[in-house]
Length: 126
Image (cartoon, rainbow, N blue to C red):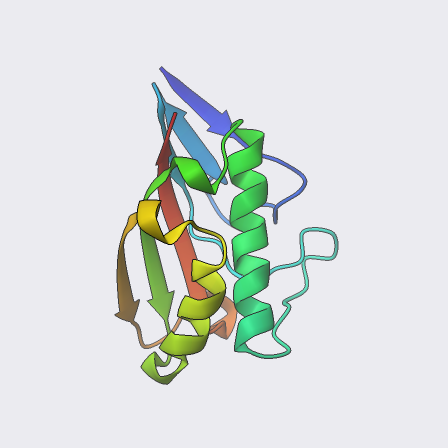
């Protein structure tokens, strides 16, 4: 059974996708970027602020599915500059308990949507 998850507390989709899809007990989120869900404006003061906004957007999507970061089993991080990795990782890590943190990959890409610096998606289970 497939259930579409959408919440006004995260940015509205800007294309033919949903914020997340719940299949049985597994939630697949779309990649989140640093859009403020209230204004749909980018929050890019610096890489830490940008990453916090991305994580808050993911948090809102998880909450809409009655989950939180403890349910996350896999994260995918896409960054435009590997030199930002340490700063992104510090913010990202603050949302997890290190001993139970999810599996993850981090990939540098040439360009991300709206020319942001970081995009993150997660898979979570109940």
